[in-house]
Image (spheres, one colour):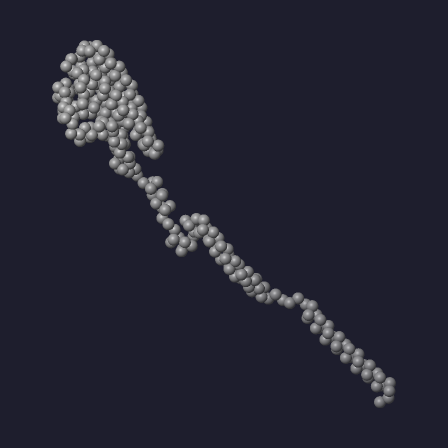
Length: 288
């Protein structure tokens, strides 16, 4: 083979080699540059969605944990975990049940207010006094519902004028009514049975006015001693009877609610003493 033929063959071989290499390089380049198919796009999305979800789950759990801990520190009753709920104290339930609980029984609803009348009588009953009731006191108390108790209460009296005795004990009635006003005012601050207590306070005020009128009439009888006119006697009886009614209205207002009044002892003392004084009115105008 001559030199030209060899050169031509070599050149041809080189061209073929170059074209082949270029073709191979072109195919390789096209494969590298072509976008990879996203066949598992669904799988990728699910994987990507599940991956953030799983990564977010600990975040939520930790945030929930951090949220529960401050709630537990500040307000045990606001916790939502099972353990914290179990540890909640029942104070809130107790408070709600006590606020919605029915009113306690009359004996438990109100404090007991001992009266000056009952204390004075108890003291007299306990004393071993040599003082005996006067004949006037014996006579005045003879028609009373409880003569022995009446004589015990009045045994220290040495007056010979029924009007004077009545007027003195009208002062005792004023003290008792004031005790009732004080007791009603104290209980009213509790916010219970306010309307009923208003009835009592109104009638106590009327009772004080009636006692003032009865006292003024008795004073006239004392100055006119021993003569007390039937008119004056009637006025005293009317005023004292009104006092009994005033106190009775208070008791009735509470009874309508099914509750005993906190001033029960005071009201009973007012009625009992007033009944004695009404009995004494029968002797007004007489000198003993």
